[in-house]
Length: 465
Image 1 (cartoon, rainbow, N blue to C red):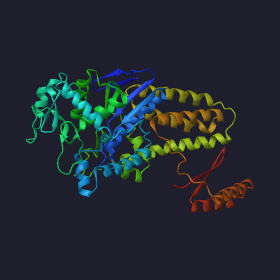
Image 2: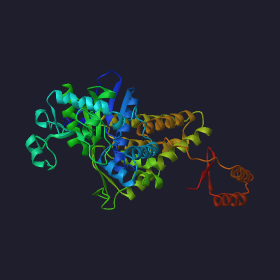
Image 3: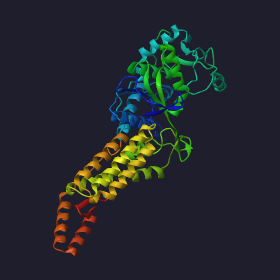
Image 4: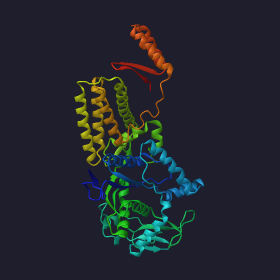
């Protein structure tokens, strides 16, 4: 499999350090509010990559952190009159509700920054001892210029970075490019004891510690949104490699931005959508499918029209699968159409896999999936049970890689007995050619919210949506 590595700016053949084991770290949310659709993109994209690795037979150790102490969290907690820990607990629970509905698999571990303070202090001390960090009035800063390869991920040199550096007059850095590892305590903030006084960790040190603690000093894949390349991931590389002398992550993967109606998503512009808002109105898998119908590295434009189109597309997959289940019950034992359908499915599956192998090209892969749906719909009525079962199993297999078709039947209610009895009465009327009575029962069923379809394989009952 080839993956685009932000570090080298090329597609590289991916092989994990350990045979049959992939170690992935994906930057998670700051838990001060409901996750928005921008947060959802890396969740869905890298969950799909994980699923594909598992499909290929790898064991995936998947770590995604929660940032549970940060300026936004402190401000909101103080405003609500609760502790940062109470705020974090609330929104971690809400995160899981949304992620579960999007079929995002639970991480191997979701470490919380506040539970790893001791290891953060140890890593900061290690950097101080090696001359990469220094203490000023209880704050600890990283000496950026001392790390010779600084800028290698964002592909910027020191002069470019200097030109864009912002200097806070309250900071006492040796150099404007230096970044904070530990912040001295301020009034109204949570704090922990350290050799430099009470305070809390900087954002960047959190991810370095959690990645190395649970995956090792060199990991296979570090991933997140494009907005994290600089300064977050750049700083993670500097502090981690300065401490260990080893490469921190072999592959760096970044997904593109999400825009709303071709504009940057912003609360101030009123074009801000949370995942909760969308999945309460549309099928959660429609949002997932929408995200996967574009290549993960490209910008993605979101609009209500586009999510509605994704929901229609998702329904095509569900309807195809439902039809296969129905047809299998009454299909013939063999058919001349079997070979044609099987050959088309095998060809499209091979193309689907080829697309996934090419830098997780889910845009092409979903295209082949819908071609498969078309082939199934074209030939299914004339195929045998064995061929239909092959089609059904393959469709389910490929959808499983993408994390869709997993809620099939989840909310389906059993068809009431009175409806089944009416359908049987209609069938009897048709047998004796009493078509007027059959039509009357059909209209009655429709008034009760059901339609009946007469197929060569028997009568199919569908609830009117």
